[in-house]
Length: 411
Image (cartoon, rainbow, N blue to C red; front, side, top):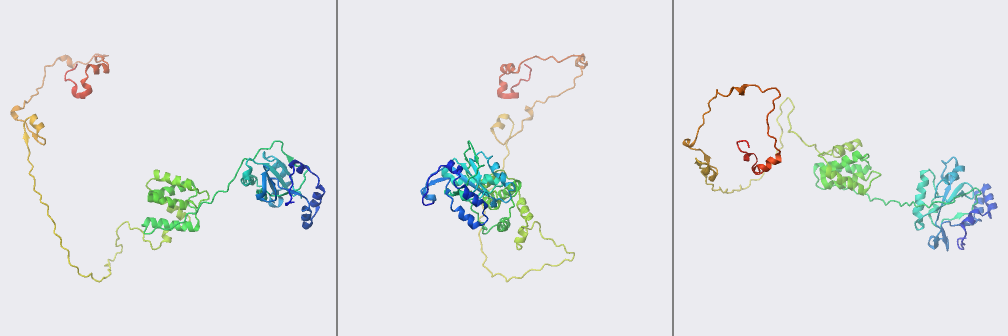
């Protein structure tokens, strides 16, 4: 009884036939009220904990075992229910699996690695079974969940079951970023915020697919810089896989490598989902890219609105101070020697005609006749073999003066 619990040995409980006659009567009883009355006469245990009283705050110690319960009514899609126990026995962490008292369900025991984290172990076990389309009852998540007597002669007992190390913590809900419009925004920002307001209101995901997500980030980064980061979060948070840290990292990447774009992907994805700033802002005039032209063949004089003339105001007179600029006369200095030219910057070198020596080049016809003879077959120029570094050591001024150091005569 809950008010007077007694310790038991788990193996003795699982193999006992003391209440087998009551169990057989429950299995054949069709009246639910009588069946429930018979169930109330058989004892029950808390497989996961030893307690002073049947309450979670009266637990003395954890048994290290986690129970699971599979009801047939929660798994109507399972057709081969009679062979389900044999399939569950294939899990390496299942220590025991047998039929329930009414033989319409299965239950079992799993050793866990961290008894103090009983609930996280159960959540992980439930997710493992869901992968195989098996739904577990949620009651055993409570460490003091009861298990009524049941005996199964064909129950599965594992010789060396493995411990369940898996844990699962429900992820914390990410706070939703509220969207608010910017006061006194320019035309581009106003259009973007109009589309974002509609996207946020209708929960439209325009970031499905990495390429679209990346391109939208680059659009916002190139247009708004760091101030577009909040826009990127608000747009991305509608996606089911939104993560704050990942979104921040992606936008930082877009800020570093973006190219000059003009919100084409953002507005294009909005149009694909039925959102257009032109429909949301019918009062917004389109930007004028060229002056107006009169396209009518009949020339019509434009009509101007008349306004009351402004009141006459006293003209403001100002005295302009004229700078006193004295023109500077440029003097050209002409020199006739190199020394004077070097000593007088800006001067012009014009040497005296008497100092110039003019050379006359006359044609020469009496050169040796062998100069005109062709070279014999196989003749090669005669060169003096010399290593460059030897020549450099022999003539070091070349390192300092370059070509200007070379003599006019060969060495």
